Length: 415
Ligand code: HEM
Image 1 (cartoon, rainbow, N blue to C red):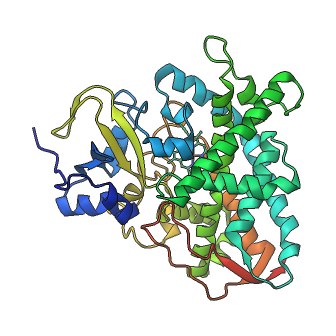
Image 2: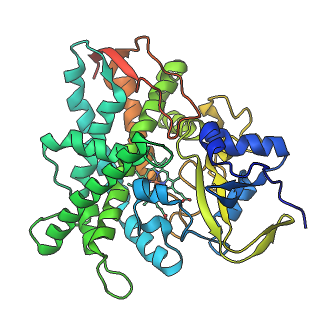
C-alpha cells in the first residue's frame, strides 16, 4: 500500500487561507501527485484533484456529506440541516424537491426576469457617472430571484436583503468582521424567510404554484412530514443566495470581455460562441475552491488507503485548471469548448457527477442561462467605458472578486 504524501506542518489551515485557491494545487505539484494529506482545522484531511479524483469523490457509495462541511461554513454559507449535508434516501428526496423547481420553462422565466431588470436599469446608468457592476447586478438578481421564487420584496428592502445574501457568501473563508457579517446575514435571512414559510403554510401568502417558496414550504418527506420551519428557510435560502452569487460570474464575464475584446463580437455572432464563452468563464475564474466529504467506509484507491470517517477535499479550482484535462489551463480560451461533449468530472465549478443522484449543484442551468443573458446585455444592449480601476484578481481571497467590483462609466443604450 502506498503512503499518501503528507504535509509536515502540524496544521495547514493558515496556509490554506494564505494560498487560497492554489492551496491544493501547489502541494500536489510539489509532491508530484494528485493526492496528499494535511491537517486542516486540526483534522487529518485528504486533498485530491483531477478527473479520476472527481469521479471517486462523487461516488456516493464511498463518501457521505454528513459532518463534512466545517462549522464556519454551515454558520454562514449553507446553514444547518440543508440538502448539502444529507445522504442516501433523505438526500434523494430533498434533491428531487430542488430539481422539480428547475424546469426549462422556469429557468427561462428567471432569465427573462433578470433580463427585464437589466434593460430597465440601463437608462438610469446613462448619466455618465460610474456604476459598480457587482453592486448593480447583485440587486438585479435579488429582485429577479425573489419575484421568481414567490418571495415578496418591497423596493425599500432590496439593498438590505442583497447585503444579507452577499454576507453569507463572503462568510465561510473569512476571519473577523467579514465572518461576523456572514453570521449576521444568515441569522437575518433565516428569520425573514422563516416568517414567509409560516405565512405560506397558514394560507396568508399566496406564493405561485411551482415557485420555490411554495414548493419548499409545502414539501413533505417520505413520512409525509413538512420540513421544520427553520430547515425550510435554509432551503429557500439555498435558492436565493446562490442565484445572487451569480453576480460574481457576471463580473468575471465582464472582466473577460474587457481582457479579450475580440470576444465581444464573437459572442454576438452565435449562441454556440456565447455558450463556449460562458463555460470558459466558469472554468477559468475562481469561485468555490473545494468541496468536502467523508469516507463512508474504508477502501483503497490507486494503492492509497482511505480510512472510514476521514475528511476528503476535492480541489474544484485545481481540477478546472488541471493540465491533463485542459491544455494551457491558465489561458482564457473559450474555443476549447467547441465540440465539447460535456464531462461531468472535468468541468466542476459547481461540483461534478449527477444532478439528481449526487451533490452536483442544483442551479447549474440557471447559472448558465443568467450568465448568457448578462453577456448579451454587456455586448448588445449597452456600450460602456472601463475607467482605470483595480481589477487585479487575487487567488488568495476566497471568494474572489476584483477589488473595484468592475466599474463601468459613460454607459450608452444601444438596443
Ligand atoms: C454562482 C453560481 C454557482 C456556483 C459557483 C455554485 C456552486 C456549487 C457547488 C460547488 C456546490 C457543491 C457541490 C458539491 O457539494 O459537491 C453547489 C451545490 C448546490 N447548489 Fe450551487 N452554485 C451556483 C449557483 C446555484 C444556483 C443558481 C442555485 C439554485 C437556484 C444553486 C443551488 C445549489 C444547491 C441546492 C446545492 C446543493 C446540492 C446538493 O447538495 O445536492 N446553486 N453549488
